[in-house]
Image 1: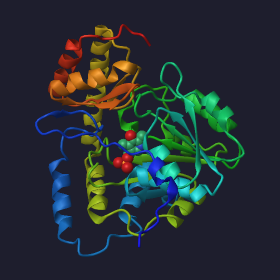
Image 2 (image 1 turned 135 degrees about the horizontal axis):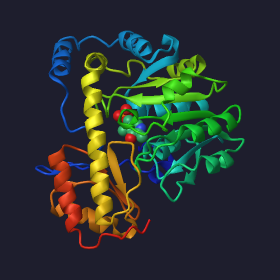
Image 3 (image 1 turned 135 degrees about the vertical axis):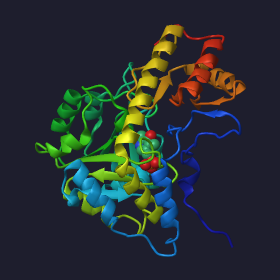
Length: 359
Ligand SMILES: *Cc1c(COP(=O)(O)O)cnc(C)c1O
């Protein structure tokens, strides 16, 4: 006897995690390179003694804390097993057969995966020439079947962020019945004042009851290994997220670590500002070398190297630097400590064929 799996599984895109090579500098997964602060490690260690018990399914303490911090009612926040799980829950809560999910491309690789696993259709809209979201074109691409639009800002892998005026115009024009999922996984690295804070847009809600803002503890808060993210949205969306969530999806160590990280948020966010300053420095150096580099508001930079991507990736690997290559498209490099960034810049400098700002 054999088991019969879904016929479409083989056509599913494979999520490619950043590679880990012993001894190499890892700039492939957009993690922060510094480990958790000692107080966070201590909180996790304390909580370890209680893991024979199930976690708090309501994630009560963390959600209360987030609601107070973000100045939103407790009923407008949900937590999930990473914000990736919340993306999936949003699709599951809104899409049935024949419905559609819309997103820009290239963007976060989990979107096509989630969409196909849910068995619904996807529609993509290319980024503009400057590698930013083309929101007017995305608006035009909405059909009667569209239920969710993912807007990733800053966008993974290009680092570009949508501006307030563009996003507000988009939200004003999106038809009724379409959820806009604003994925702000890199929000804490944004320095451009023209880039809106999704939670503020949510609080100022001027009639969009279809906006869900996604954030995570994985990047700025350095808890990628524990899997916890959150969503801020109007209450009906939060209720729907709960309805489709797996029981106990946010584990007890993650809940405790997220709370302990909020205790030291000032220090962690100052660290993000340091990374943002390094990002701007690295970008300026790359531009000076002749690489075309879009303006990044995240903790990584994007090199649209096209056909040269594989050669660039191999060159970096020869220098024991692991970056994230998107074959035929470009390379994404996570910003790390100044020393590791320098190691990358040295490799970029010695790459034999830097493109001359081809665009
Ligand atoms: C890293 C990332 C996430 C976060 O994922 P978690 O599941 O919270 O670790 C979400 N969206 C984007 C665009 C990302 O790059």
